[in-house]
Image (tube, rainbow, N blue to C red):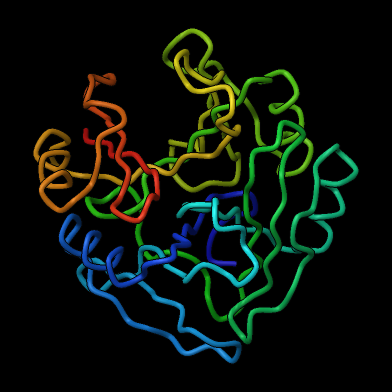
Length: 256
Protein backbone atom coordinates (compact mmCIF):
# COMPACT_ATOMS: atom_id res chain seq x y z
CA UNK A 1 0.00 0.00 0.00
CA UNK A 2 1.04 3.58 -0.60
CA UNK A 3 0.14 4.58 2.97
CA UNK A 4 0.30 2.71 6.30
CA UNK A 5 -2.52 0.44 7.43
CA UNK A 6 -5.06 2.35 9.55
CA UNK A 7 -4.55 5.79 7.99
CA UNK A 8 -7.52 7.92 6.95
CA UNK A 9 -6.74 8.16 3.25
CA UNK A 10 -9.95 9.00 1.42
CA UNK A 11 -13.28 10.79 1.79
CA UNK A 12 -16.31 11.17 -0.42
CA UNK A 13 -19.65 12.94 -0.41
CA UNK A 14 -22.92 11.16 -1.19
CA UNK A 15 -25.60 13.59 -2.35
CA UNK A 16 -28.90 13.76 -4.21
CA UNK A 17 -27.73 16.80 -6.21
CA UNK A 18 -24.22 16.13 -7.57
CA UNK A 19 -24.30 19.09 -9.94
CA UNK A 20 -25.03 21.61 -7.20
CA UNK A 21 -22.43 20.03 -4.89
CA UNK A 22 -19.75 20.11 -7.58
CA UNK A 23 -20.47 23.78 -8.27
CA UNK A 24 -20.17 24.61 -4.55
CA UNK A 25 -16.96 22.72 -3.79
CA UNK A 26 -15.17 23.79 -6.94
CA UNK A 27 -16.03 27.39 -6.12
CA UNK A 28 -14.90 27.03 -2.50
CA UNK A 29 -11.68 25.04 -2.88
CA UNK A 30 -10.69 25.61 -6.51
CA UNK A 31 -11.16 21.93 -7.28
CA UNK A 32 -11.66 20.47 -10.73
CA UNK A 33 -13.42 17.19 -11.35
CA UNK A 34 -13.46 14.14 -13.57
CA UNK A 35 -16.47 11.85 -13.81
CA UNK A 36 -15.40 8.21 -13.81
CA UNK A 37 -17.83 5.77 -15.45
CA UNK A 38 -19.13 2.89 -13.35
CA UNK A 39 -20.74 -0.37 -14.49
CA UNK A 40 -23.72 0.12 -12.17
CA UNK A 41 -25.09 3.47 -13.32
CA UNK A 42 -24.16 7.10 -12.54
CA UNK A 43 -20.50 8.10 -12.67
CA UNK A 44 -18.27 8.51 -9.63
CA UNK A 45 -16.77 12.00 -9.45
CA UNK A 46 -13.14 12.52 -8.49
CA UNK A 47 -12.01 15.96 -7.30
CA UNK A 48 -8.54 17.34 -7.99
CA UNK A 49 -6.64 20.29 -6.54
CA UNK A 50 -3.83 21.54 -8.78
CA UNK A 51 -3.87 18.20 -10.57
CA UNK A 52 -3.67 16.10 -7.39
CA UNK A 53 -6.49 13.77 -6.37
CA UNK A 54 -8.14 14.91 -3.11
CA UNK A 55 -11.56 13.25 -2.64
CA UNK A 56 -14.70 12.02 -4.37
CA UNK A 57 -18.46 12.36 -4.82
CA UNK A 58 -21.20 9.84 -5.50
CA UNK A 59 -24.90 10.25 -6.25
CA UNK A 60 -27.15 8.98 -3.47
CA UNK A 61 -27.58 5.22 -3.78
CA UNK A 62 -31.02 3.84 -4.69
CA UNK A 63 -33.05 2.75 -1.70
CA UNK A 64 -31.62 5.29 0.74
CA UNK A 65 -34.59 6.76 2.66
CA UNK A 66 -35.66 10.21 1.50
CA UNK A 67 -35.09 11.68 4.94
CA UNK A 68 -31.36 10.90 4.72
CA UNK A 69 -29.52 13.99 3.53
CA UNK A 70 -26.11 14.37 1.93
CA UNK A 71 -23.19 13.14 4.00
CA UNK A 72 -19.41 12.81 3.91
CA UNK A 73 -17.79 9.43 4.58
CA UNK A 74 -14.15 9.04 5.59
CA UNK A 75 -12.29 5.83 4.74
CA UNK A 76 -9.54 4.08 6.66
CA UNK A 77 -6.99 2.39 4.42
CA UNK A 78 -6.48 -1.28 5.30
CA UNK A 79 -4.43 -4.14 3.92
CA UNK A 80 -7.33 -6.61 4.18
CA UNK A 81 -10.91 -5.31 4.20
CA UNK A 82 -12.41 -8.73 4.96
CA UNK A 83 -10.18 -9.36 7.97
CA UNK A 84 -10.69 -5.82 9.26
CA UNK A 85 -14.47 -6.07 8.92
CA UNK A 86 -14.42 -9.35 10.83
CA UNK A 87 -12.28 -7.77 13.55
CA UNK A 88 -14.66 -4.82 13.76
CA UNK A 89 -17.65 -7.10 14.20
CA UNK A 90 -15.85 -9.13 16.88
CA UNK A 91 -15.03 -5.89 18.71
CA UNK A 92 -18.68 -4.84 18.87
CA UNK A 93 -19.06 -2.97 15.59
CA UNK A 94 -21.78 -3.45 12.99
CA UNK A 95 -21.12 -4.15 9.31
CA UNK A 96 -23.54 -2.03 7.27
CA UNK A 97 -22.03 -3.02 3.91
CA UNK A 98 -19.95 -6.20 3.65
CA UNK A 99 -16.64 -6.06 1.77
CA UNK A 100 -17.08 -5.78 -1.99
CA UNK A 101 -14.84 -5.21 -4.98
CA UNK A 102 -15.04 -1.83 -6.71
CA UNK A 103 -13.94 -2.76 -10.22
CA UNK A 104 -10.12 -2.79 -10.27
CA UNK A 105 -9.90 0.16 -7.88
CA UNK A 106 -9.98 -1.66 -4.55
CA UNK A 107 -12.22 -3.37 -2.03
CA UNK A 108 -14.50 -1.47 0.33
CA UNK A 109 -16.79 -2.00 3.30
CA UNK A 110 -18.85 0.17 5.60
CA UNK A 111 -19.16 -0.28 9.34
CA UNK A 112 -20.41 1.44 12.46
CA UNK A 113 -18.48 1.46 15.72
CA UNK A 114 -20.21 0.36 18.98
CA UNK A 115 -21.56 3.91 19.41
CA UNK A 116 -23.08 3.97 15.92
CA UNK A 117 -20.58 6.25 14.17
CA UNK A 118 -20.10 5.20 10.53
CA UNK A 119 -16.71 4.82 8.88
CA UNK A 120 -15.53 3.27 5.63
CA UNK A 121 -12.81 0.70 4.93
CA UNK A 122 -10.76 0.87 1.73
CA UNK A 123 -8.36 -1.86 0.62
CA UNK A 124 -6.38 -0.14 -2.14
CA UNK A 125 -5.66 -1.61 -5.55
CA UNK A 126 -5.53 0.77 -8.53
CA UNK A 127 -6.91 3.53 -6.31
CA UNK A 128 -4.45 4.11 -3.46
CA UNK A 129 -6.20 7.06 -1.79
CA UNK A 130 -5.72 10.82 -2.01
CA UNK A 131 -2.52 12.22 -3.50
CA UNK A 132 -2.14 15.02 -0.97
CA UNK A 133 -3.10 15.81 2.62
CA UNK A 134 -2.89 18.92 4.83
CA UNK A 135 -2.40 21.32 1.91
CA UNK A 136 -5.10 23.94 1.22
CA UNK A 137 -8.03 22.27 -0.49
CA UNK A 138 -7.24 18.77 0.77
CA UNK A 139 -8.31 16.60 3.69
CA UNK A 140 -6.42 17.52 6.84
CA UNK A 141 -8.17 15.79 9.77
CA UNK A 142 -10.96 13.44 10.83
CA UNK A 143 -12.72 13.69 14.16
CA UNK A 144 -15.08 11.37 15.99
CA UNK A 145 -17.87 13.02 17.98
CA UNK A 146 -19.60 10.46 20.18
CA UNK A 147 -21.68 10.29 23.33
CA UNK A 148 -19.75 7.23 24.57
CA UNK A 149 -16.05 7.94 24.23
CA UNK A 150 -15.25 5.08 26.60
CA UNK A 151 -16.74 2.52 24.21
CA UNK A 152 -15.32 4.08 21.07
CA UNK A 153 -11.61 4.42 21.83
CA UNK A 154 -10.92 0.73 22.64
CA UNK A 155 -12.79 -0.31 19.50
CA UNK A 156 -10.52 1.66 17.18
CA UNK A 157 -7.44 0.59 19.08
CA UNK A 158 -8.41 -3.06 18.62
CA UNK A 159 -9.50 -2.84 14.98
CA UNK A 160 -6.90 -0.47 13.52
CA UNK A 161 -4.08 -0.55 16.06
CA UNK A 162 -4.40 3.15 16.82
CA UNK A 163 -2.63 4.43 19.92
CA UNK A 164 -4.62 7.08 21.78
CA UNK A 165 -2.98 10.03 23.53
CA UNK A 166 -4.47 12.98 25.35
CA UNK A 167 -5.01 15.88 22.98
CA UNK A 168 -4.37 19.60 23.39
CA UNK A 169 -7.59 20.15 25.36
CA UNK A 170 -9.17 18.17 28.24
CA UNK A 171 -11.46 15.44 26.93
CA UNK A 172 -9.90 15.44 23.45
CA UNK A 173 -7.99 12.36 22.28
CA UNK A 174 -5.59 11.91 19.37
CA UNK A 175 -5.09 8.62 17.52
CA UNK A 176 -1.52 7.88 16.42
CA UNK A 177 -0.13 5.39 13.91
CA UNK A 178 3.40 4.25 14.70
CA UNK A 179 4.12 3.33 11.05
CA UNK A 180 3.23 6.78 9.72
CA UNK A 181 6.19 8.55 8.14
CA UNK A 182 7.70 11.60 9.81
CA UNK A 183 7.58 12.91 13.35
CA UNK A 184 3.83 13.57 13.34
CA UNK A 185 2.13 10.22 13.92
CA UNK A 186 -1.36 11.66 14.46
CA UNK A 187 -4.20 10.35 12.32
CA UNK A 188 -7.50 11.44 13.87
CA UNK A 189 -9.17 12.94 16.92
CA UNK A 190 -12.06 11.96 19.19
CA UNK A 191 -14.22 13.86 21.64
CA UNK A 192 -17.51 13.66 23.48
CA UNK A 193 -20.38 15.12 21.45
CA UNK A 194 -20.43 18.87 22.20
CA UNK A 195 -23.25 20.42 24.23
CA UNK A 196 -26.11 21.76 22.16
CA UNK A 197 -26.04 18.98 19.56
CA UNK A 198 -29.63 17.67 19.21
CA UNK A 199 -30.30 14.34 20.90
CA UNK A 200 -31.48 12.85 17.62
CA UNK A 201 -28.18 13.68 15.86
CA UNK A 202 -26.08 10.54 15.40
CA UNK A 203 -22.58 9.94 16.67
CA UNK A 204 -20.44 10.80 13.70
CA UNK A 205 -17.03 11.10 12.06
CA UNK A 206 -16.45 14.62 10.73
CA UNK A 207 -13.99 15.45 7.95
CA UNK A 208 -11.84 18.61 7.91
CA UNK A 209 -10.43 20.30 4.82
CA UNK A 210 -7.43 22.63 5.02
CA UNK A 211 -7.72 26.26 3.92
CA UNK A 212 -5.30 29.19 3.99
CA UNK A 213 -7.68 31.49 5.88
CA UNK A 214 -10.69 30.10 7.73
CA UNK A 215 -12.63 33.38 7.97
CA UNK A 216 -12.23 34.11 4.27
CA UNK A 217 -13.26 30.59 3.28
CA UNK A 218 -16.28 30.60 5.61
CA UNK A 219 -17.49 33.83 4.04
CA UNK A 220 -16.89 32.45 0.54
CA UNK A 221 -18.88 29.31 1.41
CA UNK A 222 -21.86 31.41 2.49
CA UNK A 223 -21.64 33.36 -0.76
CA UNK A 224 -21.77 30.07 -2.66
CA UNK A 225 -24.93 28.96 -0.85
CA UNK A 226 -23.41 27.15 2.12
CA UNK A 227 -24.56 27.50 5.72
CA UNK A 228 -22.42 27.99 8.82
CA UNK A 229 -23.23 25.61 11.68
CA UNK A 230 -20.08 26.38 13.69
CA UNK A 231 -18.60 29.90 13.41
CA UNK A 232 -14.84 30.12 12.98
CA UNK A 233 -12.98 29.92 16.29
CA UNK A 234 -9.40 29.78 17.47
CA UNK A 235 -7.74 26.36 17.63
CA UNK A 236 -4.12 26.48 18.79
CA UNK A 237 -2.15 28.30 16.10
CA UNK A 238 -5.08 28.41 13.67
CA UNK A 239 -8.87 28.42 13.33
CA UNK A 240 -11.62 25.97 12.48
CA UNK A 241 -15.30 26.25 11.57
CA UNK A 242 -18.18 24.10 10.38
CA UNK A 243 -20.24 24.31 7.19
CA UNK A 244 -23.21 22.67 5.51
CA UNK A 245 -23.05 22.58 1.73
CA UNK A 246 -26.15 23.50 -0.34
CA UNK A 247 -27.09 19.81 -0.65
CA UNK A 248 -26.83 19.13 3.11
CA UNK A 249 -23.33 17.69 3.55
CA UNK A 250 -21.59 18.74 6.78
CA UNK A 251 -17.83 19.30 6.97
CA UNK A 252 -15.25 21.47 8.72
CA UNK A 253 -12.50 23.82 7.65
CA UNK A 254 -9.15 24.21 9.37
CA UNK A 255 -6.39 26.77 8.87
CA UNK A 256 -2.97 26.96 10.50
